[in-house]
Image (cartoon, rainbow, N blue to C red; front, side):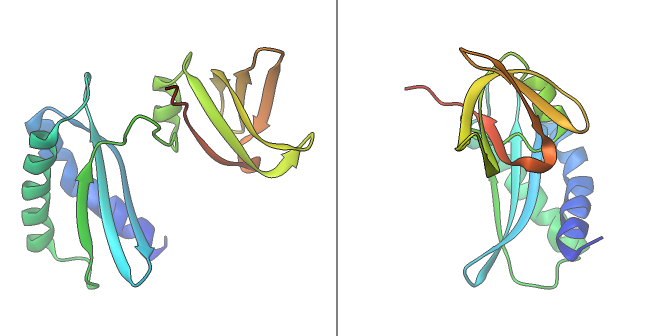
Length: 154
């Protein structure tokens, strides 16, 4: 397991009792380097969405727990937020909650001269994702998908 995965998994374990107590759920945890800074991001959600108070309460409790456990030796910036409207669908639980929703799929390589697709998420399994566009049903191998996220219509 990589350092990143270890930090993310350990943070999720610390975060679980916090979110349960505060009535929110873990959407995702990521540990990333941007420029010269490391970020530990916890995304939380609940039916109807989270607000600034939810994020603040989780952030304070998580910060205290991280200080106590002290398993990340590098300096990092802790951020707690909502996954947002155009949330990335990284895990099967994200895909499950988004069945029937409009999504955007971006592929690593062009498929029929196109790398971006938009449609309704119809189904998925461990290897593939199926969306329905206005014209057809498209099947993508998960290994070919760079990113899938909820579509935002303005």
